[in-house]
Image (cartoon, rainbow, N blue to C red; front, side, top):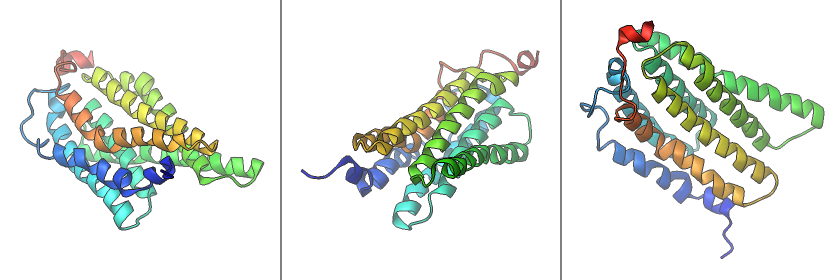
Length: 233
């Protein structure tokens, strides 16, 4: 067999069909129905259900639009980051207006692209032409750093009821970005196995992120143990 991991990665099986099966099955739950438990913060339960429904549909549309319609990747990357920031802000501050959370999530979504684009072009100015994969590596490193900072500093400072849940989902996001980064280092080094490794974060990002984020919120493990009054003290 002369098919490489590169060829497998860029084929329809990995790049399309394997990414939409789980989200499509998740819609059969369906996430907008009455949840099994009050959740990590009962005040945010309705928001999480609506968020899961909207972004599961977007997750299915993403690879279809890129692979079948040939649309550019970047807008969907930004949408994928936006869904993370919106979830965290919506759960951390459930009493604030949703419009404000959307605006703040959109602003945070542009931080990593700005850092990555600036770093990449500074590197080009110093070292000369670089492959585009270096830009994505800069993006991945910056997002891991930002997600871990949110997990360690920004979110705990807001003292949310659902702190343990939010730290768990931010760790999950940092994990798939870190795996993408390791894979891209291997690819840049000419190691074909890097494309095989990239399949794992793709699955974490497309197939399992929505069910995991929704499922953990309503799990017993992250069930709320504090009242809103206690959270403000």
